[in-house]
Amino acid sequence: MIYVQNADGTPLMPTTRAGYVRRLLKKKEAIVMSRKPFVVRLAQQTHQDCQPLILGIDPGMTIGFAVIHDNGDPLLLGELTTRSAEIPALMEERRMHRMARHRYRRMRTVRRAKKAGTIYDGEREFQLPGTNPDGDPLGSLHCHAIKPRLARFSNRTRPDGWLTPTASHLRATHIRLVDYLCSILPISRIVIEYAAFDQQKLDTPDISGKGYQQGQLLGFENVKQYVLERDGHLCQLCKKKSQVFLHVHHVIWRSQGGANTHKNLVTLCDGCHDKVHTSQKTNTMLQEKMPGIRKRKMKTTLINTIMPHFYRWVEWKHDVGRTYGFLTKHVRKESGLDKTHALDAYIIALRGAPTTGRINMDVKTFPVMYGKQYRRHNRQEITRQPDRKYYNGKTCVAKNRAKRESQHDDSLTEIRQQFGESYVSALRVVKGTHAKKSGFTLVQRGDKVDIGGHVKVVRGFGSYGTRLLIEGEGKTPTPTRNASLLLKNTGIVWGE
Image (cartoon, rainbow, N blue to C red; front, side):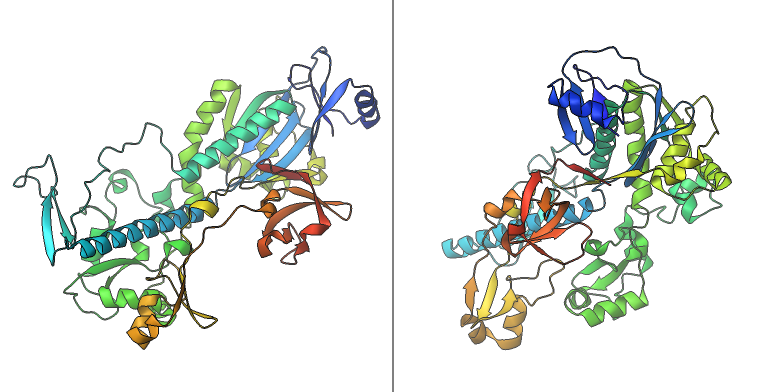
C-alpha cells in the first residue's frame, strides 16, 4: 500500500500501483515523504475525489486502529505500543536522583556549619514567616543541627486540566496517532471506544448510592493515618510500639510495581524497617506474612483520566462518534474474531459505517501494521547522580555513603558498622562521574540500521556503544561496526 498526498499536503486515496508511482518519482512528479509506511507527495495539485473512510480507535496502553470503507471492507489495520508502562519507573528513578541530590546538599551544609562553628545540638523550633504561633499548629518547623531554608512549595499550583506525566504522555500519543493517520488517509469520520471503568465496583460488586462516599477510609484524614490505626500503632513484625518513629512501609516496593493503597501498606518500627530494606530474608518474611498488591488497575485509571480530554480534542477537529466496550465484546464473540487490539478497532470502526454490523471476514487474514514508541531524549545520562564507589584494592566493597532506594550493594555506613573505622579509612574512594556524550550516541534506541542487507530496529546498546541489541533477537548483541544507520528515531517506529 502506497499512501499519496496532494501538493498542499492533503491526503488522497492510497494506491497499490507501484509501477506508476515509480515512474512519477523518476520524472520528479512526486517526492518520497516517508518509507515506512511509504508515503509520496505529488509535485502538482490534482483533483480530490476521495471515498469516505472511517477510522476506529481502541484506546489503551496499546492502541488499536483500523481504517475501513463505508461498506465495511478493511483498508488499514494496526497496533501502536506506547511508552506509558515505562514512564512511572522513569519518574521514580528521577525522584530517587533528586532526593539524593537534596540529601547531599544538606550533608554539605551540615559539614560547612560544623567547620564554621554555627551548628547547634538537639532540636530547635523555627516559626515560619506569616504564620501565627498560637493559632497555626503547622506554622513551625522542628529541625536538627542547622536552620532550614524557607518553605518554597506553598506557591506551586497546578493549572486546570493538569494530568500526571504518564496520563499526559498517553493522551499526547493518542492525539499524535490520529493526526498522523489523518495526514496520510482522507478520513471522514472517527469512532472511539469510550470506556469508563467503575473502580470501586471492581472491588465491591454490590456497591451503590452512598457506598461510594463511605469506603474503608471514611473518617480518616489520609491513607497513612488509616494504616496506623488499623495496625494499632504497633510494628507488625516485632509487635512492639516504637518509642522513636513508626514507618508506613510498602510491602511490595513502589519501584517494583507496588500499589499506593492501604492493602499494600504496613506499620513497621525503625529497626524492622531498616532490616526489611537491607535483608532479603526479612523482606521475604514480611511479604509471606502480608502479601500486598501491585498496581493492577493502572491501565484502567489512565484510560479513565485521558478519555474526556482526548474525546474533546477529536470532537473539536473531526466528525466523531463513540461506542462502548461491551458492544465491541458482543460483536467479537458473535463473529468469532480473535481478541486483538487491531480487530477490536475494526469492530469499533463498523459502528460508524452505514452498513453497521456487516463484517468482512477477510479481516482475519488482513495484514496488520505494528508500531512501537521509543524514547527520543535521555537527559538522565547528564543529570543523574552517579554512585560513589569504595575499593579495597581492586574490589568494590561499598557504594555510596548511605543506601539508595533499591540498592542491593553494601553502603559505607554498613561497612563501617561491620569492620570499623580503621578499615574504612584505608579504602580508596572513586567519585561518581557523570555519563559523557560520545560517538556511540549517534546510534540510539529506535533507530533503523542496515545489518547484512536487512533492516533492523535498535532496542538498546552496551559496552559503551560497541554492541547493539536488536528488536526480536533476544539478548544476543551485534557489533556496531556491522551496522549502518538508515533512519533516526522519529518517536514512533513502524514495522511489519
